[in-house]
Each structure stands twice: as structure tokens, then as C-alpha cells.
Image (cartoon, rainbow, N blue to C red; front, side, top):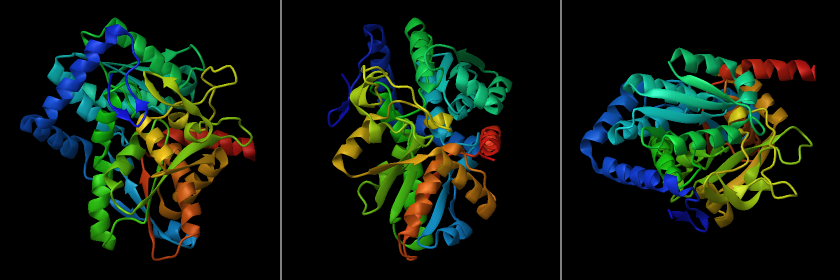
Length: 389
């Protein structure tokens, strides 16, 4: 069942979920063709979300790199502070269209949980967010934001107590409450049609990059860079650029130096099934899902979206890993050079972009999707800085 990206994708789910996935796909197809739905989506994206977001020339960061010019796609300026609003808005409107009064979601860094809670409040939907106990502790500001927005936050104490386990818990809830509940999945992962829906809703990022790059420097970017956990901001960046000569670079979390896996699924994983889809998965020697490690809660995931798996195998997108210390360095660079605090997730992409810019001539343009802001990570960064002192 379900769309494939080469061999990847599909829908490997219990029979009880098949009707819900069919219903979701049909609702999505109808909504995309419905002018009223599209108008309401565009209105809320503009007036509640704050779209479009600008393309910003990071001139001082570019001087630090000493090569190509670096531009930032400012998704951190969206309502809620991250690209997660794009997907949450579309799916929440679909829940209303399907008559589902309750939303559930999973979250790692908390940004998707915040976006879901915001849309639940705005549209009058009850909201419950599952979050691994480890992530609850390290992303406390977002936990408080979700609760203030009226969402119930459920700490998940099973497994490794991170994003993978939050998804497991959300799926169990959905199976039990499928008639009244929409699972607002936060990344381009999971069973069909979720990867396609999320990718299309996030593709506004790449469409705006194409338009604004033509206006700012008269051509598409030479290189586009985005961080990859499950992969929603990256696939939203890459999809509209696939037909252009733009090079595409996805940046995974390498974790601490010396870590066996980090969270670099495309670099260190192998094909397998996780959360209802066939894609790359990090597995241990016994074939069990491996324990991941990353300073970034949002990238700390043992799987990746199936479209990324296909793009990796095809060679159209290059994927690299950046360690925790690189992300922390980039966090400081952007703060000191541009007055912008990046989330630790896109800080991985910033580090890789600076490294790439140094190798390229000044005439080239590198665009980095700054997928979220970093106020949520201040305690983590402060703790890591003290530990290294």
C-alpha cells in the first residue's frame, strides 16, 4: 500500500489504521483541489504564521567563511519559531475537514509540539503531545509553551525515551482512538500518505527560495543546505529545487565525537522498516533499532523519510554528518556574527554551510534553511559549554 520513492516508502501498519490512512489520503486530495481550503490555508499562513519568510544575506558569517556568500532562509521567524508551523497548519485544517475534534502529535525538540498546540488552540481542537522523557528534560521551555497553549504533554518513559519512543506512543494512541483523532505527524516519515503530505506542505520553503534567489542574485542558489532528522525542512527545501542545477546538501547529526551512530541514519544506517515505512534505519548488531545520540533533540532519530533515502541512493542529494561540537561552534558563530540564535538542529547545517563556503569562490551563493530559533536550546548550550570549560 502507498506511494513509493524507488523501493522506499509504503505503509506497513496494523489493519486498524488502513481505513484512517485511506481517509487521510482522500481528504488531502480533495482539499488540494478545493479553492476554499486553499484560500483559508493561505490566509492563516499569512496572518497567523507570518509567511512569506525572508532570505537574509549573512554578510559577516560569509566573511568568517572567506569564500562563497551565505544566505539564510529565515524559517525561524515563523509563528512559533520554526518551520513546523507549515505542516501543522495544513494537517490541522485537514482534521477539521475530516471532523476529527482531537489532535495528537509527537515531538523531539518541542517545536512540532508547539506548532500543533498553537493550531489546536486557534482551531478549537483538543491537543495531546507525546514527548520522550529525555527530551522533556532538555527542552523544558517548549514543554511550558505547549502547556500554556492548552495542550496536554505526555512524557514517554519507555525505550530510549526520545523521539522514536514518542512516535511509538502516538501511534498506539491513534490505533485506540482513530475515529475521533487525527495524528498530526511532524516529519516526512511514517506510512503513506504522510511523507508526501508533509513534503508538499513544507515545499513552500523551497518555492520561496527559488523566487527570492532570482530577485536577490538573479539565479538559483549554487548550493542549498538543510539539516536532516526525519527530514521535513530538508525535503521542503530540496523538492522545488530538484529540477535546477542547484547542488543539494543534507546535514545529519553525527552526535558526540566517537559515537558509533550519532543520529546519522543515511550515513550509517541500512534499509529497514520503522514507523510504518521502508527507509534507512539505524540498527545494532542484533537488528534492533539502535540508540541514537545527539545534542539536538530534533535530529535524535533512528530513521529518516523515504524520499531522502531515494535521493541519497540516486545521488541527487549529498548527505553528510556534523558532530555536536560543530553544531555548538556554529551556534556561537551565528550569534556573534549576525545576532541570530539558531536552534541546534539547523546549527548543524550552518556549520556544514560554512565549511562548504570556504571551498567555493566568492561569486557562488549558498542558501541555508534556518529551520528554527535557538531560545529553546539555551540551557543545553550553556550546559555543554560548562562541560567543555
